[in-house]
Length: 91
Length: 223
Image: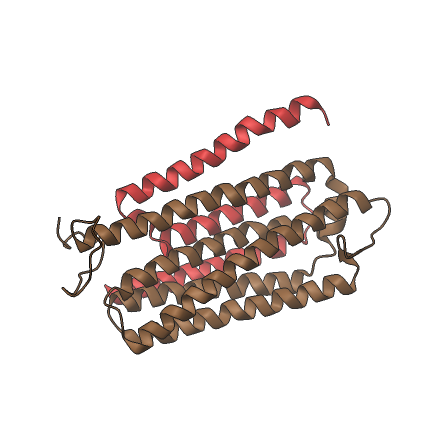
């Protein structure tokens, strides 16, 4: 039990370093807009690994999950309400 | 609702003092952890607004952001990312050791976490010094290819504000980690596992912020 948890943590760390190597490596290959897509997808994957495994999001009390979801939704609201302003004004 | 629920907290020795507003120790621990998560939610707003402003500026100055990003030090930036990810591994191992009640191991793992945090700080400050040498510090000394100067100024404004605020957060984390390392070594509190876990939540969050800063600052355009 204990050892499998520690193995999980180490495996997550290796996955994080592999993802770092991929995001850094691919940024030297000209892929146009896909460079940005890869970088963002990998950043989100790394963040989720840290939040779910290291911060134990799903092993925390249910209220913690509620707080985490509200934080994500608040950020989405911030972006969704502000972005149209910049898009529509044309500057 | 005693300490049987593993989601709420570790089993406590009876000596734990419970503050007046709480019924029992597990409730107090639950409130403390929830409090840290709520604080981190406010930090999401704080850094989220910065990232959003960055995105708007990048859409307005795409070429300048690409040109400016080439002047960041990718070797030091990538090394620092690896250092921080590794520090998070030691932090989570310290959390586990504290849960299992292995105080000395907890202290040593926390010290390693703190040393990696200090290494990150050292590398970051070295980078700042190199940026200053290369005339990339807005306000103090900034000169850039005139075609991109305006956008590059905005980019390096974001670079110093975001990495600077991140570094402040990391320094706070370093203080927490080294304080708890000392407490773990001296074997004082009976709430060590919960304290280390709460410090760990903060530490990992600071890591998550850097995970997004890294591609936004160092990888805009490398080809």
